[in-house]
Image 1 (cartoon, rainbow, N blue to C red):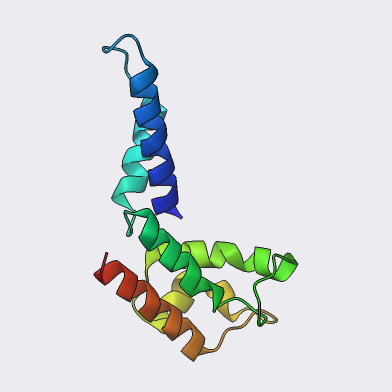
Image 2: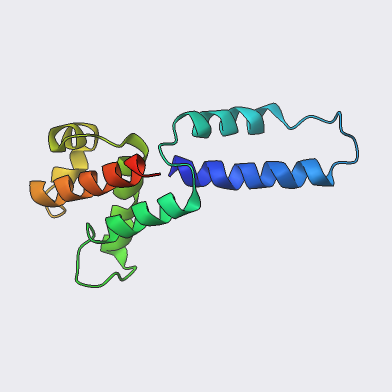
Length: 126
């Protein structure tokens, strides 16, 4: 998710600033642009919120226990997209992520709505 990339890049930026002997030395432009992008489009800003989003997404995954098999690894990007975009309704989620209704991986609307409500609560109380 964008918020995770933002956290990692900020940490790396701090490391580079502390390691640099020359205070005038700038970070590469690509690094700065990517950091600006992920900060701009991150809905969550701290690691606890990211963990809560990931935890709420585990109930969205198939199976009674979380096992990192092929089915789960195929669904993790869906969770990342939903976490990045934070759609407000089931219809919006289905529109921006059509694979939610793909045959064989179809999720019922209640499960999608529960996940969206969980994301909204994390975002609201962050």
